[in-house]
Image 1: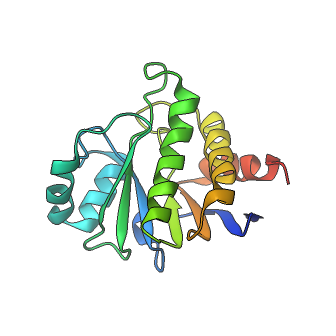
Image 2: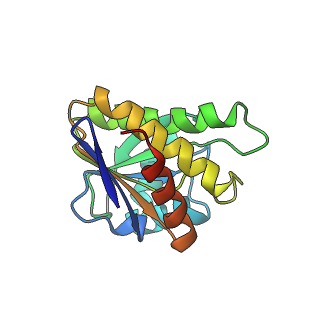
Length: 177
C-alpha cells in the first residue's frame, strides 16, 4: 500500500529491513549505545558487519527521539540512520519522542541528500510500544515531515509480519488526504 504526500511516496511492505535493495538508507531501531543487540539492531549490525559497530561507538550515546547516520558497510544501502525510540511506559511523552525519532531521521536523510529511506517499526519490540499506536505516530510523523523534504522522495515502512503490516496499512489509510 502506498500514498503520496507533497511529492513524497510513503509505502508499507512486509519484509526484511536488511534487504532493501536500491534504498539510500535503512533505519535502525537502535539502543542508546548504538551497539548490536536483539531484534532490528541485531539484524542490521549482523548484516552490515563489525565495521558498523566501530563507526557507531564515537556517536553514542543518543537519547530517545534522536537519530545519527553512519555508512551501511555490507548492507545494500549507502547509509544507516540509527534512531532511538522511547521505551513505552518509561520515556515520556512517548508519542512525542517516537514522532521525533522519525522526523530526526528524515531530516538527517534530507540533509545528506538521500532520496529513499526504509524504516522498521521503531520501539514496538522489546521497548514495548503498542503496535497500532506506534504505527499511527510513525505514519503521521512521516506525512507531516514530507512537505519540508527537499531530497527524500520515498519513505518505506518495512514490517515484520502480517500484524505489523496491517497496523501500518490502517494508519496510512487513515491519514488525511
